[in-house]
Image (tube, rainbow, N blue to C red):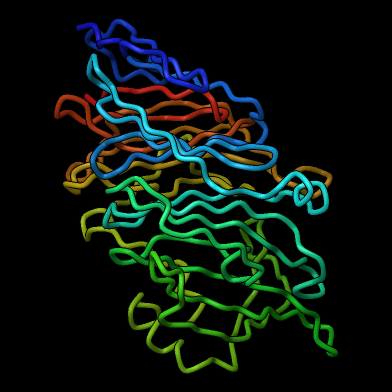
Length: 366
């Protein structure tokens, strides 16, 4: 079977290249059956990729200054694809020059209705003894009408610099921590976790508390660990803990809604397990809409002599939830970025993998 080529060349040099697809073996390095190459003016600013609930492809294209692009490609697996582009407000050239660019975020709500983009940069002043302030430009996009609902320029640390994960149907869990050193010499962190409602981006519940860190001790397995405790919890913490089934406030931001079958899945390939390392193992990326497949991101890394972590190997695995068997394994370059998502093509499951911000490849899941 030869997958069809798109009959048009997309702006921003998006080009789709079909490859011959035969009976593929479940090898460690399968060949992609479909490719999409992205070129842009500022590749170092990144390309952020997501698959919408209707299986359309969404690309958030980075820019040095001014507007950023959000491109949606629908009917990408047909001879007549449809491309739509939105220009999203971003930092000006002066803002980028005067404040160090940090990162960007691109998330979709679980109900598939909204996309939220964030371009974060450093702001004047310190949030704590160890962390600088952040400021950001946030855009909320209605994917049904494909229009910008709101644009927010904010220095609120929870919005501008917080760690985000989707929650419930159309909310975001935002978490922010700023560490301090007490007079006793012990370190503690002022933690905030909030449920942000989309599209308003207002907090419906907020939990604030102090997280105290004990001394670092060797755990007997070649690694280090330390105890933690919390205090000064605000009234909203109890409700947030109840919603996320957390026994302590630190567990709120670890919440990941998955089916019971996926929760009980213990996937640990031999090549990513064994002796302790700086980081060795697999993390769940997502599960398919039918709860039949799970996507895992696995890697091995080691501690360097200059106190950083270097990734040695990395691979994505698609796993059958019922049997626990790996149906597909794709190695990625450990020194470059990679983002994987499950999608469908002609009613069958596929893995879409964006590598190094520019190369999107599609792999059939046998």
